[in-house]
Image 1 (cartoon, rainbow, N blue to C red):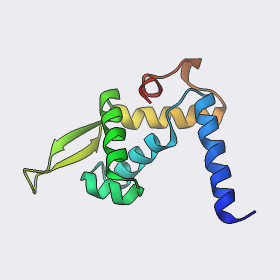
Image 2: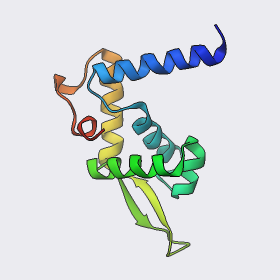
Image 3: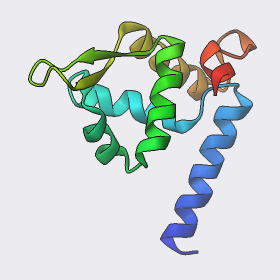
Image 4: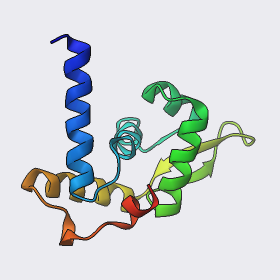
Length: 119
C-alpha cells in the first residue's frame, strides 16, 4: 500500500470514528489546533495556508465554528480593515473534551454535540 493510500485510509477511519461518536469532522479540530499553535489567533489567509484549504471552504468552516461559539472574529490590531480568527475558551474546552472522550471510546453523554449538529 502506498503512503498516500495509507493516509487516505487512516483519515477515513478517523472521520468514521468521529462520526460514530457524534463529534464534528476532523477539519473542526484542525482549525482549533492551528489557532492554538499560533498562540490563539490567526488572520484568515494565515489559517488558509496552514490548513491548505480553499478560501471558500475555510470561510464556511469558520462560520460554523463561530456559530457554535468556539471561535470569534476580531479586528486586526495592525490592519483595522482586516480581521483575525481567535479561539475562545469554549473552543479550547470542547476540543479537549472530545479528544478525551474519543480516546475512551465514547462521546460526552452519548448525544450529538451542538457542534456536530451544525456540521
